Image 1 (cartoon, rainbow, N blue to C red):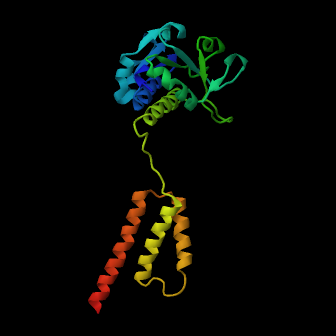
Image 2 (image 1 turned 90 degrees about the vertical axis):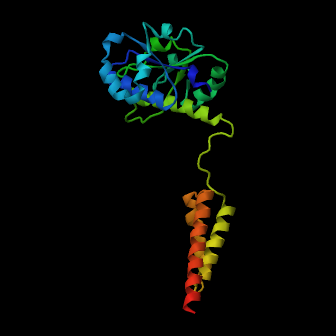
Image 3 (image 1 turned 180 degrees about the vertical axis):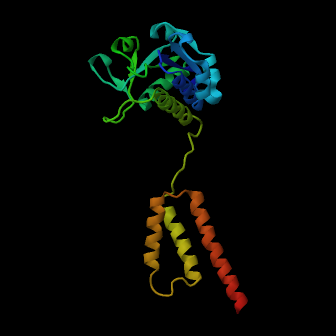
Amino acid sequence: MKLDNIVIVLDHPDESRNIGAACRAMANNDISELRIVGNKNDYDIEHIHVLAIHAGAIFDKAKFYDSIKEATADCTVCAGTTRRSGKKRGKLLLPEEFADQMSRVTEEGAKIAVVFGNERTGLTDDQLEQCTAGITIPSSNNFGSLNLSHAVQIICYHLFRKKLSEREGGYKGVTPVSLERIDQTVQRVTDDMQEIGFFKMPGREDMENFWRSILSRSAVTESEAQYLEKIFSKIAGLSKKKKNVLE
């Protein structure tokens, strides 16, 4: 996924501050090319920069067009975003599905445009007809409308995550240890508890079950498991040292 080949198109956005917030959302995800269908003089540049924070340069370099067709003429794919399905709206992809399909296209050097409609109306059927694909972001039936910048953030984030997943070795997130590894930690912890005399009466099996349940539900990582083992090993060592001093 080449993020430099992603183009964000805003079709007649109403609110200047939403443009600024959209710029910030783009910058969060390493996407920098913005095109706007509309007149630059209709917007308050100061308000845009206030919401863009340090991403104001994205707006400063933005290009303005008279139609979606003109704004996406150099793109291979033009995907319109909508939350409404319909006969004229064709097959709508989820953001992650779109990211998966577009990765190869951008790698081959083609530009991909994602079009967002006006805050009040979204993209009309006529506007979607100027697009070659559709994307939908599922949302609540009770309150389905997304803020423009939030929609931009969601789409850009999925494209960015696709880029991360393609790096050598993939994206290194947090990986919980297996139950087998948890059992090793439980064994070491309860061994140390045994050594300091915690189990004066029968009850080790219950304690082992307790630790196994807690650790598995906590989705502990390898480093966390090792740290827990070190804590109890240290406790056992200090207890032994204190006992030797007293003797």
